[in-house]
Image (cartoon, rainbow, N blue to C red; front, top):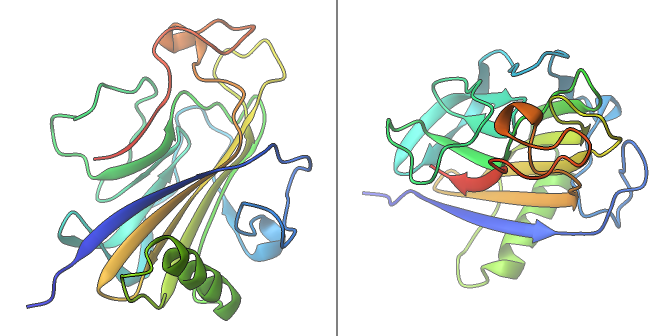
Length: 212
C-alpha cells in the first residue's frame, strides 16, 4: 500500500512592485492572464466554480479530484468557503482546505484572484527544485501543479490603499503532495465586518494561515 502525505512550506518575501510580477527573480510563481490564468468574479465572499483537476491531490490521506479557489484566501476541497471571518484552529465540521491567508478579501475594492492548473515543464521543474531544496531526503519529481494567486487584493470596507499579494502552489508526484505558500506583500489583516479598522485594515479578528 502506498503512503500519501501532504507537506506545507511557507516562504515569505519582500513587496511586489508591479501588478503582475513574472520575473525569474520573483518569489511568486508566474501568474496572470498572460500565463493562461482564469480570474474569479469581482464579488464579495465569492468563489471560483468547482475546478476539476487532472491529477488527484491527496490531502490528509484522502484523494480529491476537484477544488475551489475562494476569494477570502482559501483553497478548499469538496465545498466552497464563503466565510470571511476565520474561526480558531482546529476547526470543527471537517472542511478540508488550505488557507494561505483566510481573511475578508473584497476584490471589488481592488485586486484579482487568479488560478490555473498546469503541467508546464518549467513550472514542474521549479516545483521539483523548491521541494528538493527544502526536503532533500524526500524523493520528489513534480508531475502537476495548481497555482492560486491573490494579487493586490483589498479588504472589505477598506478606506485605505492597503492591499495583499500572496499565493498557494499545490503540487504532487502522484504519491506525495506538497503545498507551498508564498507571500509577497501583506499590508492588512482584517476587514471591517471582522472588527477591523477601515482605515488601517488591522484589529478585530485577523486573518489566519493554516491547513484543516
